[in-house]
Amino acid sequence: MKAYRVVGKFPNGRTIQDFSQDVVATDEDDARHRVESSFGSRHRVTRRAMNIASIEQIDPATSTEPKVISAFRGDTPPPADVTTESSTTSEEE
Image (tube, rainbow, N blue to C red; front, side):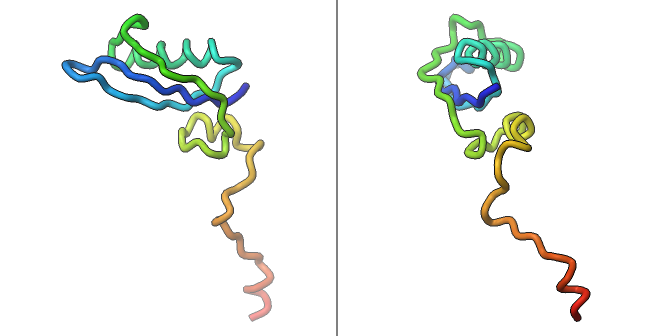
């Protein structure tokens, strides 16, 4: 499985709404299917009405989508700003 970022537009009432969604999929066609299925379920948008501008494979560490983070939890290194204190500092005092 790979992480993909899908960018496009869909009709939302009288406006055209931009979207960017990160998904976990096997290939670009699967990523397209997952996004179209999700928006059809949540917003009742048909696949014809959606306009997908781009589908690109991304590094899972750059995503903030919980499903992507969960899928690649063991594969990505922790963020640089996370520090862990060792238990030896409390024993030395």
